[in-house]
Structures are given as structure tokens and as C-alpha cells.
Amino acid sequence: MVKARSTPDWMMLGSTLLLLAVGVIMVYSASAVLAFREFGDSLYYLKRQALFAALGIAAMIFTMNTDYWIWKKYAKIILIVCFILLVAVLIPGIGVVRGGARSWLGIGSFGIQPSEFMKMGMIVFLSKWLSEQQGTITHFTRGLLPPLGLVGLAFGIIMLQPDLGTGAVLVGAALLIIYTTGARLLHLSYLGLVGILGFVGLIIAAPYRLQRITAFLDPWQDPLGAGYQAIQSLYAIGPGGLVGLGLGMSRQKYSYLPEPQTDFIFSIIAEELGFIGGSFVLLLFTLLVWRGLRTAITAPDTFGSLLATGIVGMIAVQVIINIGVVIGMFPVTGITLPLISAGGSSLTLMLTSIGVLLNISRYSR
Image 1 (tube, one colour):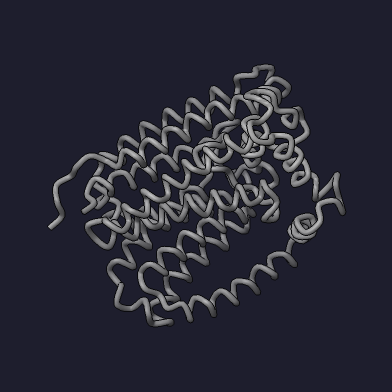
Image 2 (cartoon, rainbow, N blue to C red):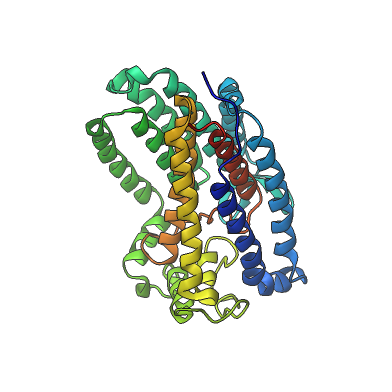
């Protein structure tokens, strides 16, 4: 018997809103110069971020007050719609190319990114499926392969865009759900080897990915080409020191660092706010993930536990990849920092997902 609904996890909610506030401030600081040069309005990205933050908060309040069991009821429909949108992106004349990837649906500067919807759609469906099939997950062919095949299909379609960063987050969150359900480590290890071979194949299929790998190993081999972003990111982080150059005082945002308001916004945070500011942001993410994991552990049913695990995994994997790229631990891949980077559908969907997580916390034991 599920207990009555109580108040949401206020520490989780507080850390989310603080991260969102930091994001709005830093998006303006990082983008003002770029926005004035491209649009003649230094507030352009700030206005967009504030708009989508407001929409996201409204969506978060809605999902926070909507019992999470309803997503289980419509999980199959949600996943089918996500697949339809994902395929529609690949159709010429419908999908919009931005940043070299056909990842968007929309008109002009406004659009949605179906791969963002797929992340949450897959988490909801896997949580429903595996909560009902727990006893079979230890069997390789009839327990483990079907959900992995579904994840592989979604990953394959996303790679046709191509969007390796979003695909990696999708796979990471899905594997965490599958492991939490009780999959055998031996089976996952075998599949990990297959995944490595597949990753090598993806690199061979697209020479620009090989350039990113070599630039990751030694960005100074091509400082004005493949290694440019990594070098400029480190140029931003280094001068920040302990306390930073001061809010709004970044030098790298003056057309040196590409995408300072999205993929590399943490570089600007480190440059302007220093080690202390960067550590504060990481502390807030740690608090959010910790409270999310606590919610997963204390959820009243298996579906809620797996759903919370998937959402926390999605956030954690995305943070790890983004900051890993920024500080030179991972090859450059286009992925935003949750709640911080400038974004439309990504920001709104992230807040919507956290609203679901907050609703689960209202029923925690």
C-alpha cells in the first residue's frame, strides 16, 4: 500500500533552483558579447534562457504534483511518439541542421530536439518494462537482450543525426536502470566489449571523430583545428585561479572560445568565478544527485525506484561528460551542462524530469 503524498525533497528542489539561477546569470555573462555581435542585442540569450527557465519551472511544478504512476500507464505511447519524432528529424525538409547535425524540428530560432525527449521516454519505458520483468533480467537472451536492443535502436537513430553526446547519455542512463534491476555483471562486461568495438567502428566511419580523439590526446598537434576548443577551454580555466577574474570579466568569451553559453559554459564559470565558483556548482550537482539516489532507494515501488535511478543517471552522466570535456578528460563532444547551459528543449525537459523525481520523493518511505 503506497503511503499518502507528503512534501517534496526540499534539498533537491533547492539545489535545482540554485543551479538554474546560476545558469541564467552565467548564460548572460558568457553570451552578451556574442549576442550583441550576432543579433545586436546583448540580452538575446538571456531572454531566451529566462523564457525557457520559466516554461521549465511551470512544467516541473506540474510533474511534481502529478502522481508518477501515470507515466507508467502511457509509457508505450510516449516511447512510440519519441521514435516517430526521432525518425522525422532525418527526413530532408523536416529536420533542421544546426551545428553540423540534423537534430532539430522547428522553425527559425525556435525548435525542439527529439533526442532530448527520447532520453526521458526511454527511461520511463525501461522502468515500466523492467519493473514488470524483474525475474528475467538475469537471463541473457530473453531478459537482457530485448531492452538493450531497444536502447541500441534508439542510439543508432540518434547517431544518424549524428549526436554522440546525447546518445552516450541515453545509453548510460539505460545501463544504470538495467544494472539496478539485477542484470549480471558478466553479461554486461561481454556487451561492453561489443560496445568498444562498435565505438571503434563509429570512429572509422566518421574521420572527424578520429580527429577529436587525436586532438584529445594532444590538442597542440592541431591548435587551430581539431584541438582549438580544448586549448581555448583550458585558457579560460587556467587564469581563473582561486576566485576568478570576476563576474562578467571573461576574456575567452570575446570570440575565442566557441559556444561559451552552451557546451563550454563551465569554462566561463571557472574563468570568472574561479575554483571556488566551479566547486560550488559541482557541490550543487552532487547534492542533487545524492538526494535523487536517496529518493530511488526509498521509493515505494520498483517502478518509482527505477524511474528515479534513470533520471539521476541521466543528470549525472551528462554532468560528467560535459565537465570532462571542458577540463580535457574526454574528447570534445557537443553536450550541454544540465540546468546551466543555454538551451530550449533540453532545459525544459530537464526541469520536467526533475519534477517527476520530486514527485517520487513525495512518496518516499
